[in-house]
Image (cartoon, rainbow, N blue to C red; front, side, top):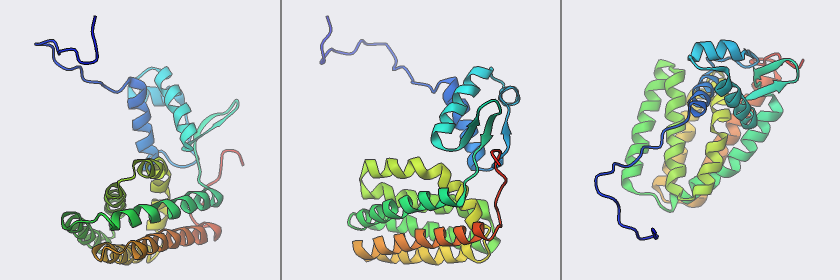
Amino acid sequence: MTGGNAEPIQGLPPVEVLPSLSDRVYAALKQSIADQRLKPGSKLSVPRLAAALGVSRTPVKEALERLAQDGLVTMLPNRGAYVAILRWEDVEEIYQMREMLEGLATRLAAARMDDELLARLRDLLQQGESAVRRRDIEAHIKIDLEFHRLIRARGGNRRLVRALDNLQDQIRIVFRTSATIPGRMPRALEEHRRILAALAARDPEQAERAARDHVRLIREAVLAHMRAGEGTERSPTD
């Protein structure tokens, strides 16, 4: 009989918990959608995806069902699966949520800021300046996401981090639209400078305000861009 304080058996290595095949297919497809290698509105053929990934159809079907729950895939009766298209209503909802959550996360981080993290954020800001000069959208997106990830992690609220992480894949898709709007990348960089200044001052109220302003300005720019008819896609349901 074993108890909660049972001695470990010598000589047995720990078992590594590996992701299932379905998990790996899900991760691969989610990454491809976020990176837009699978374009919004494109048909997701289960046989073709299975062949491309070198797997059977079952894990692909399971992955598509999970992606539909994430809002990244649209499942249509008798027509199959398509990469979801974010409409302006979706962007409005996503960024309303993000503004509130990111503001709170940044406020919490300001109260727990230290010099080591400030140095890392300043380094990211310098990398961001270089990406803007090169007009490197991929680098800009990667740096932007890491900047906010470090801040929200420092806030220390695990549920808040999880909520923002759940939005992350849809946020990445919107980032690709915002980064192509003329002048938006350098403006985002300036907004990051304001966030960093508030964090360096350990000023929670100013940090929250700067973060919320940043997210709101992205939302306004993307919505104006979409409503003008630029960057919109035809939905498979149209």
